[in-house]
Structures are given as C-alpha cells and as structure tokens.
Length: 230
Image (cartoon, rainbow, N blue to C red; front, side, top):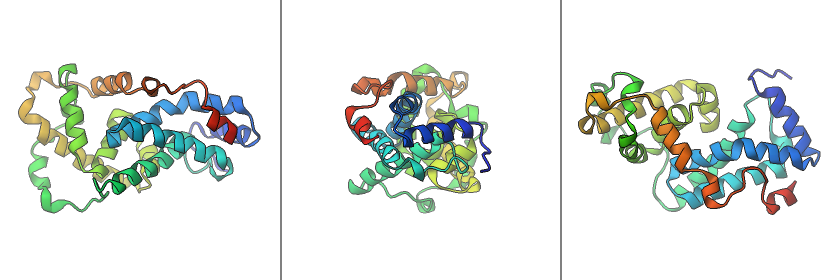
C-alpha cells in the first residue's frame, strides 16, 4: 500500500483497531477529530444542531464500516469531514437554502472582485472585525465558502481540502481565489488598512467559540450510541 500523506500509517492503524472493536482507538480518534469536523460543519451551515448531527453521523458511518476507509487515498480527518459534508449539504438542500454550484457568474463580476484582492492577508482582520468576517463568509456561495473555511480558517492543506470537498486541486484553487476575492470586496469598504491582519484571529475566535463541548459533546469519549456501533 502506497501511504503518501504524513498521517497515513497512524490513520491506517487506528482504522484497523476500530475495525477490531478497540473502543480506546475510537475514543482517541473522536478526541482528535470531532472538534475540527464540528467547526467545519458549523462554519459551512451556520446551524449548531445540524453541525453536531453531521459530525456524529460521520463517526457513526465510519464506525459501522471502517473497512471502507483507504489510508492510501486521504487522511482520516479528510475522510470524516467528507462524510459530514454530505450530511450538511443534505440539510441545506432539504431547506432549499443553497444548491452547491460554481456557476453563479450572472450574479457576480470577477473582474470587479479582482481589483479588491491584493494578498490573502487582506482578508484577515482584527478581533473587532471577526464578526464581520464570519458574516461575510456566511454570505458566500457554499462552494466558495467551503474552500475559504477549509484553507483559511482550518488551515488545511490544499490536498486535504480538495479531498474533503471531493474536487480536483485546480477546482479548489479556483474556488478559493474567487472566495477570497469576494470576501475582499465585501470587507474592504468597512475595513481601514491598519485594521487588517492575519487570518489567525478569525481562526482562533472560531475555534474558541464554536466548540462541540458547548453543546455537551464529550470530545474524549464517544456517545453510548457510537460505542455500541463499534
């Protein structure tokens, strides 16, 4: 097996232990990945209940069929986030809120956005502007929002972000570029140049305020339902 990503051997071992019924391995994985998966889902849909359900669904789906995971293809983190992503998008479609698509050029002129895009850092703002940034991200079309969340807020690699979204690297780069441009255009009028900073402020604030533990989710131990599934 050609294990190419850094966590491949660890992920393969964890998956094997879970397949053999090792509950401590499941607890280890849940503690490591439930937070990032939940925050990704919450940023994508803006609904804490949906995000928690999608995160739990991802773990339950994995535990019910751990042999479906191939460590040679993607990190386990990306595999879980990808499963959760489908659950979030299903909620959005059911509510008729959004249909994921790149074809929204009629509602946006990329040439105008390009004039507002300077550097990725121009999208990041001070703590006082985090709320404005998150509102702007929430206003992006879902495919652009997802790319920005995965790369800018969660600081995932392009390869992992593309694996989660189920798209090619070039498609991810295009979505990220357009998402950054739109954010810059939305935020530029409200932001003074000296207020701009690195995206870490938004990422840190998101991690601090959008934690599964706020919903009573135990990161160290799976729920009884999850353990029963293993």
